[in-house]
Length: 350
Image (cartoon, rainbow, N blue to C red; front, side, top):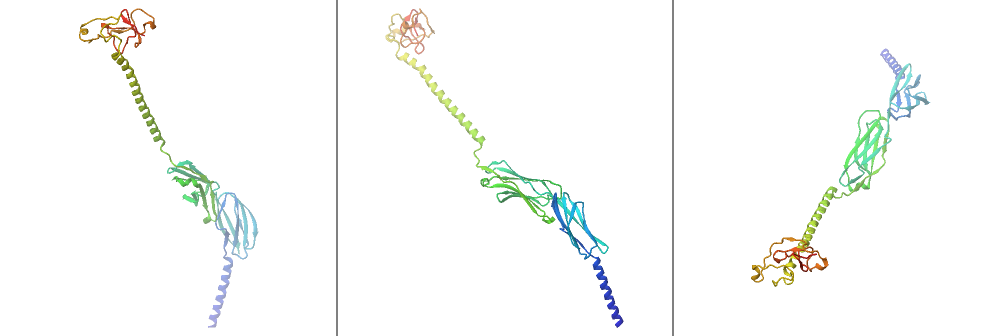
């Protein structure tokens, strides 16, 4: 049994030597950070390390400008500068004639440096709608960018963008809402957040300048006010014109009827006795023999006839303007009234 036991010990020893040799040849290469996002133009420190105890060579391969900050047998610390676009860097080590490497992708982002908020209209009535617009220019990547509209500390609206475009572009959020009475007591603002933690970056945020909204209580509809005002003015003018027409009509009617009344009830003296006044033409007819009843013939004219006299000498009280020619010796009441005495064939008037 001893020979078999000796072979067993020999086999175990050879296996141990084989495993030990394999452990020296098998090694790994690591990089830190494992994910990297930097702002355009920034620099970054990168660490390259290996599990090989005594590596022959090692280093960092990149197109960027780099410097070696510090090194030990199993690691090297580099700084790369002016990262302006997405790029790959490679860390490599050689151990016992075998080379291992690892690559790291560096992504460039454009943070939300500028956040612009706009309200329109800035003066709005309670219950009316207004628009909130927020713009974030030159930002990338859009994926992971969240734009939030705020009223004070209250969230009015929030939108998270998606997409893999790495080139800088503008992100814009527009939201329509209704004005409330308390809105004029709060400032509106916009917050842009870029979450790069899943890519090895940080949470970057930027806030716009606050803006105030002027809110007022709505008055009556201006168009309705104008209509009511115009209708009221027209109605007033109509009523006023009707009243004026009525007043002037009454005055005109009174002026027309008063002279006729004076001529009918208070004519020239002596006319009621039936005897003609001296110098006045008088024609007797059948009507005079029946109790002072007279029939007047139609008035042929109302004009100045007869000799021209001085107006003052011919003035007869109660008569204005001209001479009346009356057929049958009668004068027509209300139109031309006698003032004094006739001149030849007519009545004298002023």
